[in-house]
Image (tube, rainbow, N blue to C red; front, top):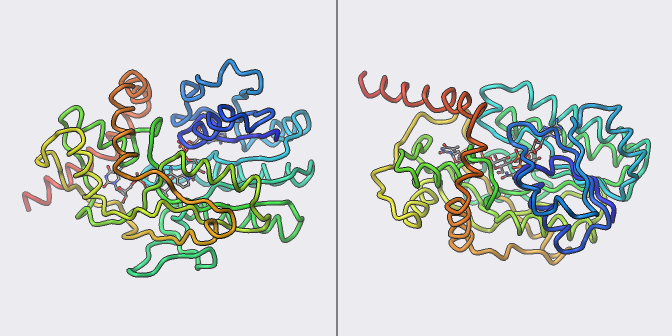
Length: 346
Ligand code: NAD
Ligand code: DAU
């Protein structure tokens, strides 16, 4: 297959590119990525010299560029990862989320409609279903109840993508995965942030009471699901992709402390995320039954591998944490700590 991969320099996109090139599953592969704070060419270094791989720095909202790439490259499939992917950032600054996640998806769909292709694989999230009380699990027909600007933008994009199938017969597939973890994840997300803080003996900031439940999926399992769907997925369909590993955040943080050999006294409960969804839970029965995919990586094993990767790649971490990240960190965490100090005094 000739693949156009948007957001291929990010965490999941780069894992997908490394896997597709490494396993010889792509005849040619073109990455289109704006290289925002979250995009990093170092993530693609393992494939950089491969003749099947090309990289274009550009914005998915740039209709002229996107049209030109489709005209020139003529992909069999677009695998669409590019997004503003962080909930906390979407709360602090919602505008870029709607620009990239909604308008960018629209630009890609319009180009796909004009040029035609085999599959438009839209990589979405379980967050679109919102928070579910026990013991509910969302299947693909479950109502959408997004809570954050990020999840609302993804839900909107999902609906737009599906409308292009119904209206124009653009052959789309929508996937909704749970929380990914693994190497190369930007250290603003729970697992890499907590690993970094534990390794440096800094406090681990747990939002609220730490009882929020997330379902953890090793990134390579997610990428394998996407590769199988490109081959066997039915167009016009939605597929949930879950890790079958639901855990409260506090338990995840405790396991990180155990693996890094650090004390639980490093845990700090800080002010909660506004609109914080309590529990995500999806059923992956459809992809298991139709496609034969299931998650293979045991969480403890995946977490150990992830901790080992961050230990061995301190240079990568230091480089991505410079510059813009510092401003975000202060905005997101220093206010939280000040708020807690105020609460303790009152
Ligand atoms: P990420 O933030 O690590 O990477 C996003 C990539 O998109 C970066 O390389 C960035 O430079 C690029 N990008 C951003 N705006 C762009 C634009 N306007 N034009 C071109 N490129 C742009 O994200 P991730 O965690 O790898 O997530 C990838 C996709 O998977 C997203 O669509 C996200 O919603 C979805 N998803 C993520 C998770 C998760 O747990 N991380 C789970 C389910 C679904
Ligand atoms: O569910 C899939 C989604 O998972 C993806 O669509 C998103 O792109 C991805 O960012 C992720 O969203 P979350 O908000 O669940 O991930 P995050 O790692 O930011 O937070 C995980 C949980 O940990 C959440 O309940 C908030 C909590 N948390 C997070 C951070 C960064 C903390 O308690 N402290 C923190 O410092």
